[in-house]
Image (cartoon, rainbow, N blue to C red):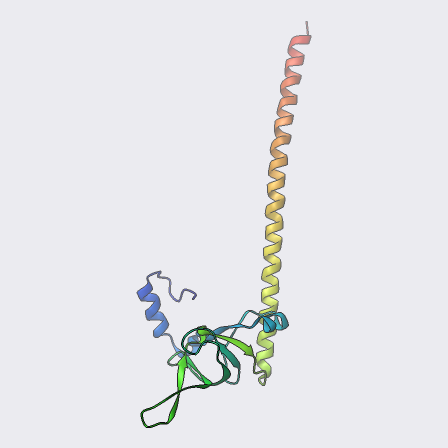
Length: 172
């Protein structure tokens, strides 16, 4: 999880996490996308939304797939179809699951703005990968130049010294 405050103390991070305003809690709902979706959309993580189909990766319900029925921003939990417990009176109740413990298998693209968000994130990821590649190429280039440059300087210094010796010994 990213740092929420400037402090590195775990207690302060937990405090910021559990007391975050609702509009900032949206970022806590990021979940990994399946390999097929990563290849298709070029994005690794997206916030879970109502209507997405998710696979539960951790906990008692691991391996279960279902549609997200409800997203609870106050409790930072999602509720998945088919993941229910029975109350004492027999009525079923959804089991709350943290969004970090699921993987999105199918996206609900009924919202046109979600496609724009995916496109924006894909472009940003491509640009960052391109920048990393350029930075890596420059670093390798600089390392080669420093190796070559160092040896060239030594050769030049040796040539200068040999010329000085030659001029000293040969002139009467």
